[in-house]
Amino acid sequence: SSAQVLAYVRALAQNGPATPLKEGGFRNTPDYVRAVAVFQRLGSEFGEGQSAYVPRAKNWLKSITSPAVQVHVGEAFLPDSIIQFQAGWRNTSEVTFNLYAVTLVEDARFGSQGWEHGLDVTGRPKLKTWSRKIEDKHDYQPTSETITLDEKLAPGAYVIELATGDQTARDLLLVSDATLVLRTSPTQALAYVCDVVRGAPLANAAVVVWEYYDQRIDDKTTRYAHKLTATTDDSGLAR
Image 1 (cartoon, rainbow, N blue to C red):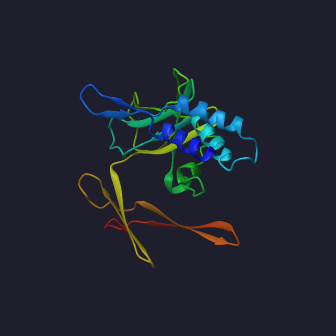
Image 2: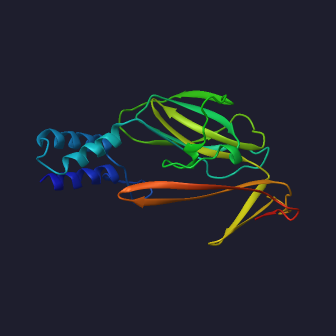
Image 3: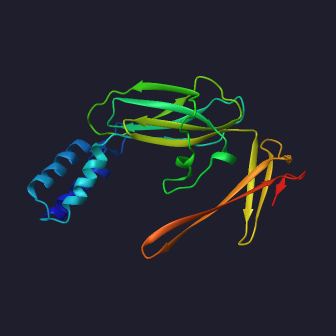
């Protein structure tokens, strides 16, 4: 049945066959090429409306074969640090990296795609941009690498963007010797800004707190956001 075929092909795409390792044990490697072939066969053998699983198969096929990119910055960096992040791509022969400087207290916005996509970089100069050729083996396998920037970055907030075609991915890259501790209750928020190494309070630091929530009425979801601004006192506190 189409349900059994779909379950089989999902197993191929998620786990794949087990391959024995020289040092012992086994490793599962997704077989995307085989999965794509079965997905395509499922779509050709069952016409529109003949199986409820065909739309699922088409969605899975699209997710496996379409170009995709991802980028992840795992931590904040102290000034003069070596900057590294993870980048991944799939089904592409070239990716482009773009680096922008942003100001979080002014530029942060919240939307349905996540706040990092709300950082508007339209019209901003690119601090750095470079492209990389990728050997696309047409096996649909995703690839991930650690990327190291050639130069150090001045203290500040940056957006690192990875693009291929019309697909983009972003993450925040933060270089700072300050950190923020936030405590909240149902009625108030307390922020403490301090030196990240010594823990000493930092006075006169600008702090912005966003409060946002979703409200669903009549099958329509609306996002509400409130922006609160404050400056830390001599104790590094902002209320």
